[in-house]
Image (cartoon, rainbow, N blue to C red; front, side):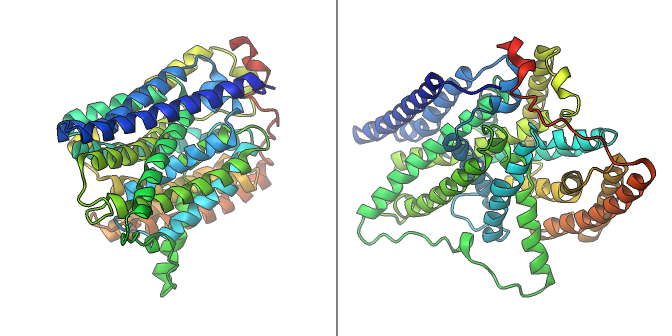
Length: 495
């Protein structure tokens, strides 16, 4: 089994330190240019552009031709960096839900946080313990006959997550760089392609970790300025932390929908997948702590960077910092959607150990082609303004609740056969369509999420009944080998 030697860890830490120093130097250059009287437009545009250059470098450095790296980052992602990657995706999801920094989300923020806890400490470690490289691996292994309809649902969820992150990133470029929407879409598409297509999961995790580090550095600068500015009060985080009293059944259903929807959404599980053996829980804890730190620093920095902040009216330098700090997490969400869509078919873990070493380059090429296709479709959808960022991610969470989470629960709790997944899919899709017709095309985010939860409950009940019947008639599903096919011998030939 692969274990990164000490010089590899030293190289990782050295690259991280170099990236941090280069990014801070770039931000210092922005402040210096603003002070010497450089054009405002140039100064404000430099923030996202410096972040773009940094991401392009990371994308080039993380390019790999090894399947173990591409699919699972060779299970070698240190927990601290995995936690940074988790925090970046969490922040990007909050930005997409809110629509813009500081705006209250249309769903309870406290239960978004609870969902992140579920993903980091329960679902992620369980997925890593199963030696999977994606949620789709579990479904493909437990329900091989139902693999393709499930993969279609996962692909749609990945596309919606990509649209949400891409649309949010495009809005930042338009606001801070001053480009047309079409040019901003091209910039974001290039950034996505370079940071996730060459390296797969390895590229995603390192790009996300760098994105979180850059955003945290900017938030820390803003917090420091707010602390130095007498009389500047930081905005409240009540929209994130306030636990609302359940007034009725609808409120309870919404809270459960948000928590379980976020907790089982695959975009938050990549850091656990890349974690070394026994480190998934530590990675999740690191991610939660860093996410809390990011949100706290972000709220405090608004006191300095906001219209009435400690530094006065927003300057071009402030615009550059805010642009970079919001653009980076939005890209992290989009990257997670791109990778999730490309891995929608999954790998059958029962046969993976002997098969994955064959035609590894062809498998990587197909995954890269799918990534480029998803980026192109998401860019076209953003250009046509089919969905806003918040609408796209809410739809993705609802579909995940109705069609993916029930099958995942069935796979985790039992060894039932594919009829259980087919019954769950049929019941969930039927209930979801019926509820969609009832709420109409102008449904709110709350109605969409509650509909997904109700459809998911119907799917789970149908799956349990069908699975029990199939197990009685045909016996349980086969067992899966416990060896990890993403870090063991089949890949030694690729090294």
